Amino acid sequence: MAQPETDDEDAILYPAERPKAFIDAVVAIAMTLLILPLMESVADTAQSEGSALDWLTEHNWQLTSFLLSFALIAMFWFGHQRMFSDVERVSPRLLWLTMPWLVSIVWLPVATALSGRMPSADSLTRIIYIGSMVFTALATMAVRLFLLRHHDDFGDLSVPMLRRGLSVDIATSLLFAAALGLSLLVPPLGYAALFLMFAVGPVSFVVRRMMPRGKA
Image (cartoon, rainbow, N blue to C red):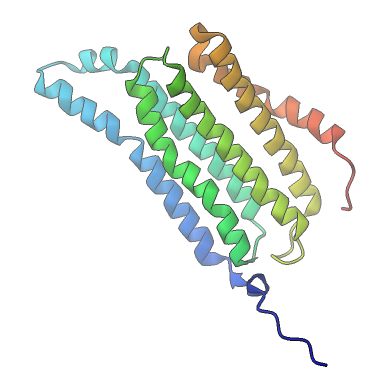
C-alpha cells in the first residue's frame, strides 16, 4: 500500500541572497531610525531659541543612548553577518526563526527613545531597554542552534565556527541579563551596568571550555 505524500515545507530551499539583503535593509533602517528623537530635540531647542550648547547640555543622555544603541545594533549585525556568511540556502523555518531577531532590532529604536526621554531611575525603562538586548541575544542563539543542528542543509557551514559563535551567544545573553539585574538591584548604577559587556570575550572562553565536545 502506497504511503501518502507529505508536504514538507522545510524541504523547499531558497537562495540566501534576497533574505540576506532584506535583513541588511531592516538593520540599516533601524539604525537610521535611532537618529529621529535627536532630530526632534534639535527642533525643540531651536524653537525655544536655545543654543547648541543648551541642546548638548539638556540632551546629553539622549545623545549617549543613541551612540550606545547604534554600537549595539552594529554589534548584533556583525555577529549575524558572521553567522550567515556561509549560508547559501534558507528554508521557511529558518526564515521564520529569524523574524524574532529582526523584530528585536526594529524595536530597539523605540526602547532607545524611551531610555533617552525617561528618567534613568525609571526601573521599567531599564527593563525595556536592557531587556530588549537580552531578547536579541537569545534570538541570535536560537538561530545559531538551528543552523548548528541542520548545518548540512544550508551550505558549507563550519561546525567549529558555529559552536564558537554559540559560546559568544551564551556569554552575551548571560551578561546582558546580569547587567539588567545589576541595574535593578543597584539603581544608581543605571545603564553603566552595560559595561559588563566588555567581559564577553573571557566569559565566552569559559563557556566554550565547559561545552561538550561535538563533532567537527
